[in-house]
Amino acid sequence: MRRVSRRDFLATGSVALGTLPLIRATAFAQTADAVFRHGVASGDPLADRVILWTRVTPAAATGEVTVSWQVARDPKFGQVVSRGEARTGAARDFTVKVDVPRLAAGTTYYYRFESLGARSAIGRTRTLPREGVSRLRLGVVSCSNLPQGYFNAYACLARRADLDAILHLGDYIYEYPNKGYGDGTALGRIPSPDKEMVALQDYRERHAQYKSDPDSQEVHRQHPFIVTWDDHEFTNNAWQGGAENHDPDQVEGDWSIRKAAAEQAYYEWMPIREDAQTKQSRIYRAFRFGDLATVYMLDTRVVGRDEQVPRDDTAAVELAGRQLLGAAQEGWLAEQMVTSVRNKAAWNVLGQQVMVAPQTPAGTRAGNTDSWDGYRGARNRLFDMVERTRAANLAVLTGDVHSSWAYDLPRDPFAAYDSNTGKGSLGVEFAGTSVSSPSNVGGGPDGEKQLADLRAARPHLHYVDGRYRGYFVVDLTRERLQADFYAVATVLDRTTKERFERGFVTESGRNHLTAAATAAPAVLAPDPAP
Image (cartoon, rainbow, N blue to C red):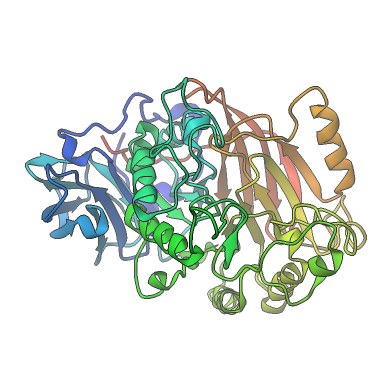
């Protein structure tokens, strides 16, 4: 593949997918030594820096280890632009994280590590652009459950060389023992440790197992990740003061201790920037892709969420003061939207965990009260924020639900909204299916009726299907945003067979979805990591 600058390949526009070489499906990360058995990763790219991550496995689990790193403009490391050393040890589970400064904006880089006589696989990453951005392509995933099946969605995304970043919207790991939520016996994917995660070592061991998966290693090796957590990085249906799957009177113990353990392991094992803010459990942050888009990664789970209430408790569901984001995060998001408007960003993209779209009419029994439908006052404040700041072209990207959905986002889709034109809509929402977790939407003998009933009951719903596992790709230009849903053939065998399911477009200024006849075409991309 010929070498092109980041600006040049963004400016080329679209080309036919068939003309682009894909990364070979068999090109899984291979290390020269067992020292780097958990692969390499990058994440949290900014215009001048990016996080590089790896983990070393020393012969003895004590003491400290020195790890050297290099960053180059080419995959053969003929143009090394930065290098250095880092120290790690048992205090951070021998994970290594480097925040590489003074990089050029909008540039693809290649990186590697060396330690204990071994050299890691080569990774590829890229910084964010500052200006002149004509196109942005993001892969979006969530809910990767190891015993439920292979991470074929990761393998497919690793082959898409033209993605700028991968957004992982949570449930990167699951906390259950084998058969607690999936039986991995037949596939050789039994969770480790084979018990419910509670203590720091439990969470570390589970993260290590997930990072040992070859498809996980390959997608991390080829693309920078921008991540946020959901509940299963802690435990099911978590909120700031506890969780549905946490009983302090049993073996789970004190919630604050368990929560702190989960957070520590997450920051150790994920390619996410650690600073004074994130050390205070603040994972929400923003990424600016020039003046094309601002991507806000939210925490709807543990920073400020009030406890879930029963669906029939309408008074509580409608209570104006109930929090999902928390006051501090709401204030931060409003400030970020003001800044985005000031910078004339064409798109405002929320990466978050649970469905925003209204599921039932106001004043009636809520839909899923673990979603924004159980926190209607908080959702009203979000819509108020969008209107008050005049944030243009809101697009919400959602995980959690193990099924694919495409919505317009009116305040009241059951009254003040025109489903034909989108009048009354303040944005659009795309919720993606899972990497491997199962769905109860659309399956079984009554599946088609269930899908039809959902569409009939929700006039703002353009698409729903839970019968496949996979991912979606968001393709943005100044004129339009397109989201394309992809299904993998199976999760019971390793494969990169996939199919395009459906695509939807919202034009700038419309806040209304229309069906796309074909997937958005791929674009010319820098060389993959070898």
